[in-house]
Length: 354
Ligand SMILES: *Cc1c(COP(=O)(O)O)cnc(C)c1O
Image 1: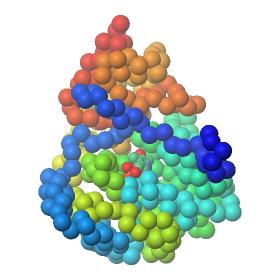
Image 2: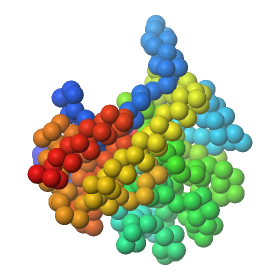
Image 3: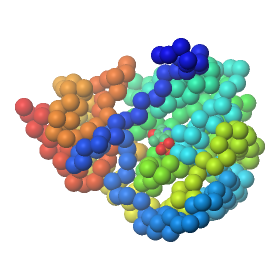
């Protein structure tokens, strides 16, 4: 704290990202990164971009990338696509452009912990809506008058997913609010709400290249919705940073979304490993919530989660533990490679029998 800090900065409660330790050889299962790495075509496209043209600014509109995203989904026009420096930046612009309203916005009590941080940054009033006792989100609970609704689908850190029909029902029940669906994990077993944007001008879908396309280090996210919602995001973007995506990121993300084969192979592999990991954890006595994401959320009836996380860490395995009411006995474990998951299970077996 310094006397030079503005009142805004004094009041901030910043987000704390999962740790990125500098030690090599750790089994890093704490931030939902993809074990398989980016598409080789994306890597080649990025390497080709490292050249003299880097002296020039990138395309401020990221037209090629937005075309490739529109094409990936089909029946989407480029005017319905917004791209940003990671979906965290896309979300930040959404909070300012669309969710800062007179009425409070709604999101689940257990959800992505960046949402309340954006509310703090922009002075947005919010109410949290409790998940049910099985940590499921019930759209019937999102009826109160509100200035907007946002949640991840699948939810984080629970992994539980809502079918597309429920998203449609929610958008239909709240015609005067923007409904934002943060689909960071949708490619690991959920149904995207993107096709619904034609029916619902109040629906905005957010996705990222960080998880299913293994490009967390590149920082590319996007939103798809009615062109007037997208225009609001462009107004904020062009009042903040006209060039959020550099040349390398635009080239890499374009090639990544065009490489459907790598995308399908790697996400299928993650889903197969998730099934194995879930079975092994259950054999060890864990309760594992049904997950449609690249992580599982699990608790053991007889072992304290924080102590388990510490015991794993001392064996070089990092998982995520949240010191938060209702979920302090859970561990969020990223679905790594088969070998990483086997290492985790062997370590847990040892710890539980000690
Ligand atoms: C990982 C994640 C994001 C952020 O993704 P980036 O594109 O890497 O900024 C957004 N929302 C949820 C729910 C996430 O888990």
